[in-house]
Length: 222
Image 1 (cartoon, rainbow, N blue to C red):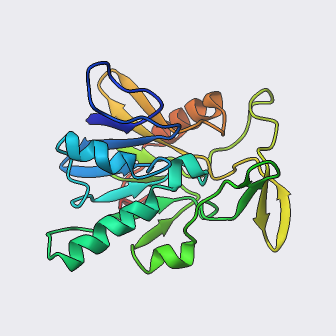
Image 2: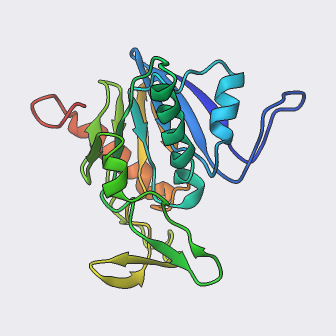
């Protein structure tokens, strides 16, 4: 597996890359090309161009959760594909994998909207979606964890604003927060966004999923 950070809140000294309070990573594994989160703006696209990473040939886009610093880059990503169509540039649209709650409206009083700017309905007109609360194996070595059980009593007990669910505003504990797990020869490698689920919960669930040793007949390969 090769992981390239396209954007976070740091940049390398001497490099002409841009940074922001957001996250986007590019992963290459088993001939699959995966984008993990899209950051806050179009910076991940600009950095990818400088890194010679072709975002028009992705197999998957996996979103860790619905906050703006991980999803707002979807707007310029749609523009990237729209321009490719208009300009007759070769492209392959990725399958988007995430939790069913990722695209719900989220709000904090002092900030207003902090969730995805793109609704599930609108996004489904531009990409194929696979929404799942259950683990999904991307390859034999890489799994999307889905909804992570909150078993620890000391992690992330405070809600982050509110979420509009079932026609009501309710405290948002970011239930959709998920992660990727890679099975390396040295052990499990966890790729996470903000770890709103709690890093200990993520680690324990990653070990649980690995111990079950999912097969094609037991769990879904995408």
